[in-house]
Length: 449
Image (cartoon, rainbow, N blue to C red; front, side, top):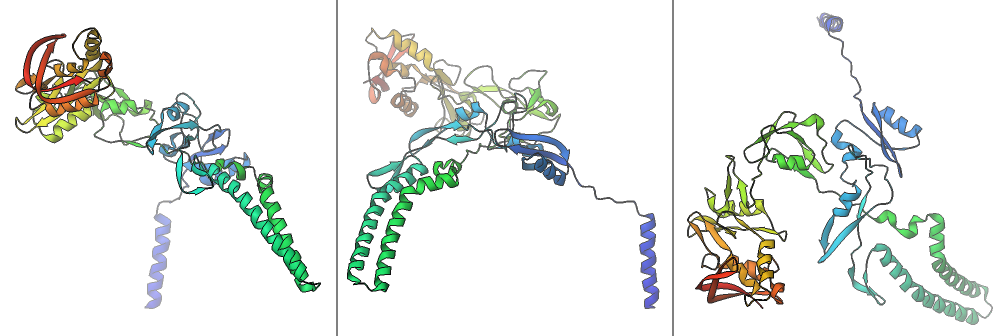
C-alpha cells in the first residue's frame, strides 16, 4: 500500500511537469546610476543590479544605486539643491537669521536637473555662534566645531608645557636622589624622556595629522548637508499648488475659482522636493479669485470674509490663512464675532477683506505738512460683515485695531516723524474719507507717538 501511494505521488509530479506552463523567474531590471565627486551621478541605463555594480566598478566610479522608482533617482534626492534653491534657504536659530552656502563640489550622489540641466550640489547652513557652558580660557563663544577644537588645542599647549616641565623636574629630582642606583636612574630617565616626547608630539600634532590626511585638520567632512522639506501633493492639493511644483495641467476652460484642470503626467517634471500620487488624466480644482481679499468655496464661488455662509472661528481663520498677506503690502484679516455669528473682514472699501499698505502710505505721505497724524489713517479702515460695514474703531473692531495699530503693519508712524503708533481707548475717533474728516465719535483710535 505504501509503495502504491509513493508511485501515485511520483506520477502526479511527472504529470504536472509535463503539462504545467513554463515558469521563469526573470531578474527585474532597474535604472543604474554611477557617480564620482566633481562629476556627479550619471545614468548608465536599464540593467540588473549586479551588472550595474560591475559597470560602476569598471568605470572607476562609485555605485550610487539601481532604482525602479523614478522618485529615487539622484535628481530627486532631498540632499541635492540647485544654486538658486540654496540661496533662497533661510532659517532662524537662537534668534538669528541663518543663510546657507552652496557646496563647491558636484557630489557623486547628486545629478543635474532634468529640464535645465543645472548641477545640484549639497547646501550647507552657515555657522551660528554658540555660547559655551564651560569657557575654554578666554573663549566663551565659538562658531563651529573646528573652532572649538582649535580653542581646546590652543588652551592645552601651555597647560601641557607646564605639566611637561613639572614632570621633567620630578624626573631630574629622581635622578639626583638615585645615587647611582641603576633601577632608579632608569626610572628617572624614562620619566624625563616621556615628558619631552609628549611635548614634542603635542607641538607637532597638526603636522602629523596633515601628513596622514588633510581632512583631519580642516574638518570639512563633519559638515552636514541640509535636507529639503518634502512637499506631499495629495488629493486636497489645488491646481495652482500642483503647477507650482511641476505638474503640467491642461485647463481649456480657465484657471479661476470653479474651473477644473486635467493632469498631463507625461509632460510633468516635478520639483525634487515634491511627492505626488496624481495619475494622468485626473482632475484638480482651481481656487484663484480674480480680486484680492476673496476666497474660493467648494461650490466654485468667490466670497469676501463677511460673506462666508457658515461662519465659525475655524472658517474665519481658514479664510485669513488662505488669503494671507503680511507681506508689507496686502493685509487680510478675517475674525469671528460670536455676538453677530459672522466673520469680520477689514478693508479700506466696503467690498473686500483686505487693505493695501501703499494706499495707506499715500495718504500718510500727503499728510506730512498737515496736522493729521499718519497713524490715524488706520482709523479709516472698516469692518465688513453680513450686516454691512462699520468703523474699525467700534467695540467689535477694537481688538483688531489694537493689533494693526501697535504692530504698525504699514509703517505709517515714520511719515510724520514719529517713532511708533499708539492705541488708545475711550477717546474721539475721527473717520476720514480721502484725507478729510467726515465724522467724530467716542471710541477707540490709533495715533502717532
